[in-house]
Length: 276
Image 1 (cartoon, rainbow, N blue to C red):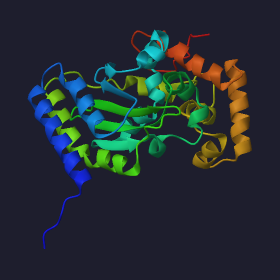
Image 2 (image 1 turned 30 degrees about the vertical axis):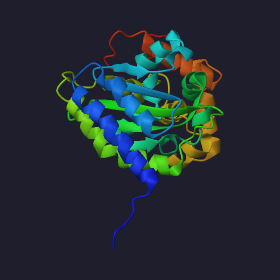
Image 3 (image 1 turned 90 degrees about the horizontal axis):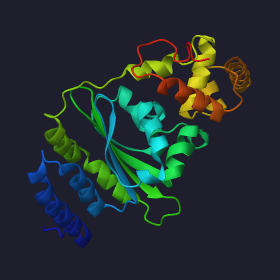
């Protein structure tokens, strides 16, 4: 019995075939990153796509709306705010390339976090998804796909399924393009800056609480993960703020970033030591 391929599927296959015909010959060229973005845009609607390579340090390869963030926020992201990015957090444990939606990664209080307010809100993005492409040396590529607040061009379930299905193809193309170009291992030293933040002034439990607050966890979620009560979380947070001489999540985020940005090269220990 013969089967008829749905016209929509035929159209998609034709688009993908045409796009790959243009993209594959550009593997290894400077045009490849932008062309890769254009291929995905031909398959699904997107208001903003960003390509960040994490090798020795983060590098924006393609970013269509970073002017909305401003240079100061971009500098802060590259200096260490990326440590709080849910996609970066996922990369720490990831062993192979994968497609994610923000909903699969973000903590329950993420929309109240300063990272969300200072980066995603400024760009005007929400409902983001994307790929984490993991290279053999531990470096990785974050290809994000986002939509503006109030945009009608949202990804449907089938479009997200299409993107997920394409993960092996996107991974193969990226491995072929960047695989031979990456010579520096990913500098994970700043991961220890987040892990050690406040350790010279706070108890171990207080450090755990403020670290989770920085990442966007709610008090209830922190309590659940640390096996303590929400009231105890609030006590730890209040004591931490008092010891750090701050009064809000905004102050906590600014203190974290201020401590990181004073280092040309972080070499270990609490970033706050000698800061104030």
